[in-house]
Image (cartoon, rainbow, N blue to C red; front, side, top):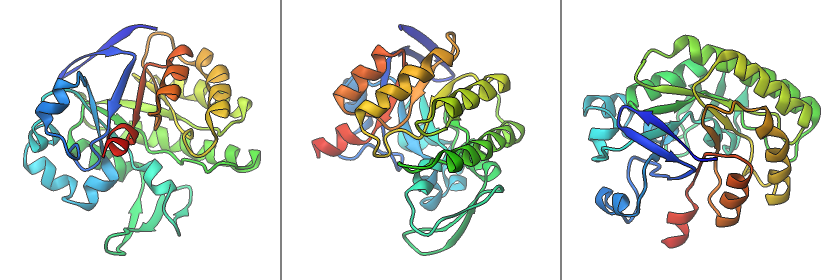
Length: 258
C-alpha cells in the first residue's frame, strides 16, 4: 500500500516509520536533525509527559508542537502500553490503578483521563485507551480484556473534545483469530479515522506477529490508516509493510544508536 493522510501540521506519506520522543524530545538529537532524517511524524508518550512536566504545563506552553519545537505532525499514545508493563497494576472495568515509578504516587488512569491528557498535549493523532494483554495469555482472559477495551473505546469517543485531533481505535485480542476479528469489526462500527493493532511487540516473536497480521489486516478498512504499535526492527517493518500496514513506531532505532 501507498497512501497519504493529512493533519493540521502537514501531510504524511505512508508507509511511514515514526520515531519516538518519549518525553517530548528525541534523545541525543535536535528537532532540526530529526527533520534532516526525513522523519514526517513523531510520537510522544502521554503517560510519561503526564508524570513530568504534566499535560497542563505543556498546554500552558502552547501544546506539544510549541513545547518541543517540532512543526510537523505528532502522535501521542494513550498510556495503555506503559501501564501494561508496570508491576502491581490493578485493572478493572472502570480503569487502571498503579503507582508512578518515580515517586510511588497512587494514580488512577481511565479512558476519560487519558483523553483529557492527550487533548491538553495537543497532538494531531491521539490513541484510545486500551488494555494491552501480556503474552502468552488465555483465550478466556483475552476475550474479557477485549470487551473491556471496546467499552473503553466508546468512552474515549464520548469524551474526546477536540475536532482538530484524530482519535484512532486500537484492536486487541492477543493472537486469537476470532477475537481479533470480533474486535476489529466492533471498532469499524465506531468509525474511527484510523485503526491500530495493539498487543503485539509484547514478546510473541516475529513469526507470531506475521500470523496476527496475516489474519487481521484483511478485516481492516482499506481507506484508513493501519498502524502496528511498537515495532522498529528492519525485518519487522518490512514484514508489516508487506502485509498492508501503513504506520509503525518504536524506540529501537534511537535507543540502539545511543
